Image 1 (cartoon, each protein chain N blue to C red):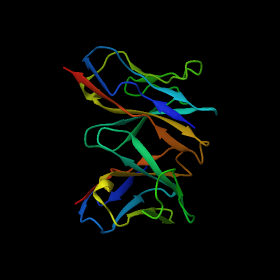
Image 2 (tube, rainbow over the protein chains, first blue to last red):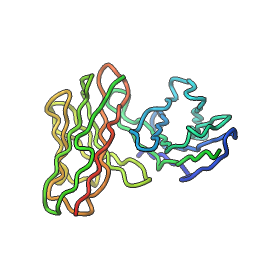
Image 3 (spheres, each protein chain N blue to C red):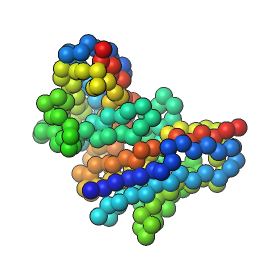
Image 4 (tube, rainbow over the protein chains, first blue to last red):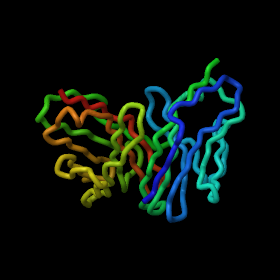
Length: 111
Length: 115
């Protein structure tokens, strides 16, 4: 069975500092991984996906199959980055698959 | 972008009553809808997957007679919590995926409180 682990429930940094939110997964198939973000009082929204290999709002994430990790990084955190971040794994294929979410990490960026 | 709405946003009911939550895709046809449950400051737990016109597939441990899911059209899915009890109090979130958009779009959630 698939599993997503986010070891840090809370993460606090100061504005301008680098930030890394950790995500590890276990899955027997070929993984498709995502990062979702939930700002205060807002709905869950897709931040980025590994297959796109893009940078969104300064965030990047690289899939490391050897370490089964998909850590989210940003070199200079901003206060508006404060939110709940979820790592998710899609299993069962792109068209019919379902998402398994990690426990989430609450990121707080202090001024 | 694709928009998913949920109604109601908040509901309070008495123990033993049934509550229906609607999930609508506003500007796309959702071939698949998902229902999640989220506890405060915790992860989303997938409850069931529903494809339009067919029976929902429930995750292990989710009572299908307790949580009735209907996906009768390409823009609407409903979750009915039957004979609700205080332990059913939670935040219920739906998401929808269509053929055009290859990702899930999430609704704003429904806060259910059972007294």
